[in-house]
Amino acid sequence: MRHQRRKFKIGNNPSHRKALIKNLANEVIDHGKIKTTFTKCKAIQAHVEKLITIGKEDSVANRRLAYSKLNNKDVVKKLFDEVGPKFKSRNGGYTRIVKVADARFNDGAKMAYIALVD
Image 1 (tube, rainbow, N blue to C red):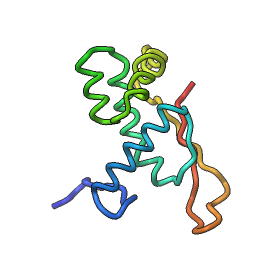
Image 2: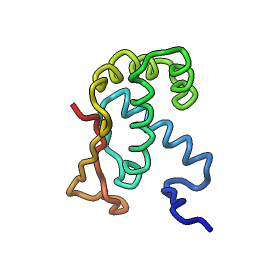
Image 3: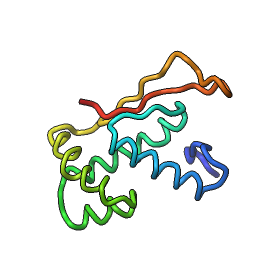
Image 4: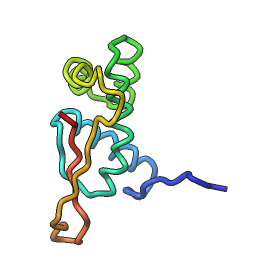
């Protein structure tokens, strides 16, 4: 039975979902804040928080692990040089999701911002 094995259906197949989460996580770490649908925000929040936890301790193994999850050298460098040390004393809750009142015009999807906590 699949009790508590829920995944967000944000793509057609698992490979598309994995690529989408990876790209959105890259953007959140690179820009600090992005606007996307609420479901996508909830799907990438855990992924980004785990990456920031990895980025708090700078080692070769952690850099390789982060690179395997992000596939972008510039974002990995930013994660370990800027984002990780900023949250060194924080034990969790690195991101915040803020709902936007207006839905997307085309399909009425609920929109939200996912941002790093200052």
